[in-house]
Amino acid sequence: MEFLGGYRSLAMKKITLNKDKNIGKVLFIVEGLKTEYYLLNKIFTGIFDYQFERYDRMAKYNAKDEITSSVFVINTEESAFKFIDDTNEYLNKVFELLIDTYNFPVDRAAIFYIFDRDAHSNTDSEMIRNAIKSLSSSRDSNGFNRQGLLILSYPCIESFTVSNFISDSYRLDFETGRRLKKFIHAENINQSKISDETILHAVKEMNLALRKIDAAQADYDFNLDEFADLNLKVFNYQEDYFNEQNKNKLLSLLSIVFLDLGLMEVEE
Image (tube, rainbow, N blue to C red; front, side, top):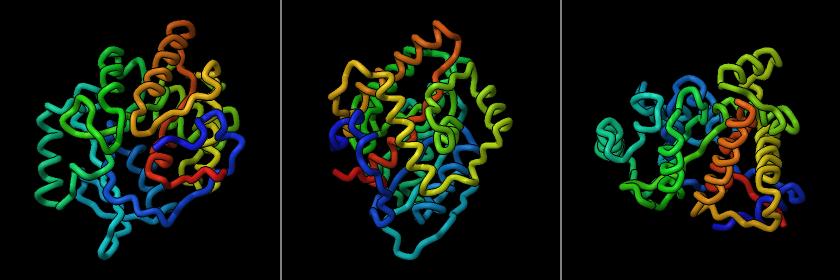
């Protein structure tokens, strides 16, 4: 689907939450543990009221009878891009378990890979670029044996939390995710306060950042079925900025998930 009117016009439109949306089966593959699990659980059970399961503890939250929409979260073997390769034995075994034990239709699910772009942890830029090109659609494969959309945060997933509460958050920059976490603590920013209103603020903040990055493309429409072009443009911008400033501009693309799943609607 094409995002209505292109991202430049998003700031001028009204964005609403669609809490009745049937999202089917959604799988998140994350590199972290505590922060990602808490954040996704907070959003998908506290705001959208879907069933939520996590593989590492075999736990189910907000269990539903005869469910049609549910979210399943698994973590990679280690926090590095090489562990999301479609030849990775650990992930392949997890996928087999999802199919055989949980009756989770991996081949028909929307899959999102949630990773940080912290130059001190994920250091192989070329590998990331290749992953961006291959993992370009949540429901269609493109050079991978399985489908998936790579969602990056700069410098870490906590960027999304900040964008919930601080206006013009894209103006902030940080060398590492650790520095950002210290900023969050100092500013008393708390994930537990994320709400309907704040995630709407976060998507508008993302839009402002994308406009800043791609100002030359005022009428550019990005396609969420083929997100690689814009994703790569953001990555290259951040790489150039880091090479000049030794910092990343604060940006989370997590809001792309809500737009892709139809959980946020843009009114004409």
